[in-house]
Image (cartoon, rainbow, N blue to C red; front, side):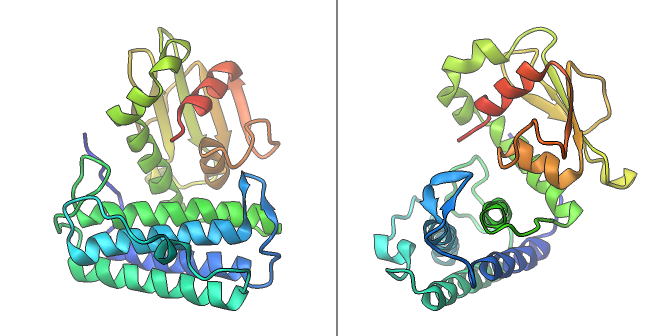
Length: 265
């Protein structure tokens, strides 16, 4: 199983900082007690602590070159208590900077623990970048802000998600739903309508066997999801409903719904 990214290690590091900065900017003047609609068990403060904790956890693994799971004290991951926006903002900024510094120093090929088959520091550069992209989408929805992502980053974010969904660990966790998803004729085409041809922002999801495979191509499928790349990404990550007027679903809508229900962690 490969989890190959399309961006350079330096680009992931740069984008992780940029995403963190944009995420923080959405929180500065926001009501941190507001409920996040796409993560209804969380407030904006909870979302911020989740993102900041993930950065620090990954950064510690890379900085220490740990080849085993690292468990940090809860306070390290939870950040400052209360709803002091300035303290939370400073904590987020420091964590992102420390993580990127560790990633830059390690380079993409340092051997470290990850929860994937790829036991390299580059996994964390890519994963933390896209983790922050998607949670920025959560923050943007909560605060009513616009959400846009550079197209090459959005395409890689979607590609990474499909690669992760193909990991055996997900198939094992979702074995009870396999019968309703996999079978003859079950295919899905994701088609970004606003990207240049060289980005190849089209994906064909093949569910006709007993596991997910996918390829980047324009190919007729039982179901097609069409729309701007950022909106396709949000639908796939369940940050935008498939019945939104921002996207178009053609063919077997039920198959798309079953896929979205299955492809979760």
